[in-house]
Figure (cartoon, rainbow, N blue to C red):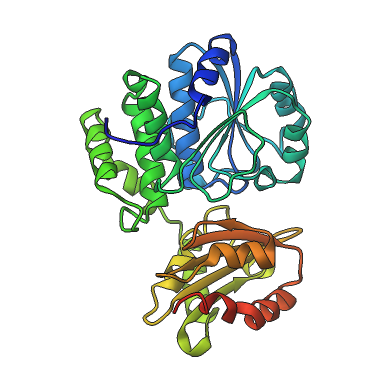
Length: 343
């Protein structure tokens, strides 16, 4: 065994009872899907289809262009664009998988309302803290570096490793790579490297995956990133806090597309002396907040307390309906609380 993530008592047996009868399956991820959400989802879709299941993949909103090359994306739906069609798939589903989110509100209000109306069995596979108790099977392990790692672990526990071919392995590798900061975060264990070695043995081309995700920038995106760093990066708390904010007007100026600001918060965190970084991106009706930290600085608690968000100790997110100016003032007024968690 490469991984050691176990099922909770009785849940593997429960899943083994319901799975054979589940012919129509829906796989969902969180809003603003990233590499781990898309990678874990497409990996699971590939495995389930190999097992003879009819699978529909539903993303709450659009997928970034740098992830649209992933295998097993054929037939996927965007809920906000194809609501009626997606609702039919959800209504007809015998089983629903919830991947890479710990609480139903992370799929967005419209899809959350639809999912909460269902009495279908749910299976949660996720690595974020404090999962909501909405699933019949909760495969939740915060020690995992990514949900994609847990897809491999799930397959290993279920004796499904034979269904991890090159395509499925490519998706798993993409999820692990993106959520582990290209294998540099502390959550990357020796087991993760052994897992990746197994994926390589299955034909996965790590060079091609890295190039597809990180080396395919459009000129507008590069200019947006340059503007964000040179003009919008600010320091607080004697250089211990860095933040970047981008309004809709600024995003439109650089022809923003989903995924263009991916990684900006990590660049802010990379500034020497910074212990906590934040990125604020204005959307149509809300502002998306991304938080990152080092060491004992806990952004998960800060996000939960002040914005109703969450995630991990050193990486969390949330959404706010404040105006940008109000939100930045609030953030500056309360950020010292998060720093106080670092003795």
